[in-house]
Length: 83
Image (cartoon, rainbow, N blue to C red; front, side, top):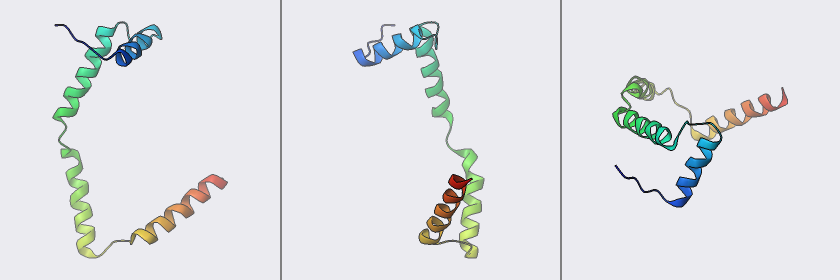
């Protein structure tokens, strides 16, 4: 199989090999393809329980407005920065 990449991607891969991140360009491409294959099989099934929990909270009226949420988030960030 012959693969042609844009020069920028080829240079980046070669730099990664030179830095020791991969043993070869072939290995780097194999890792990239394996990651794509794994992502293709992930249909976010893991998130379904969280979505159902959120829907149940909404149905109960257990929600915050965006304004209230952001106010609390900003206060939390301020507290963390001052620690």
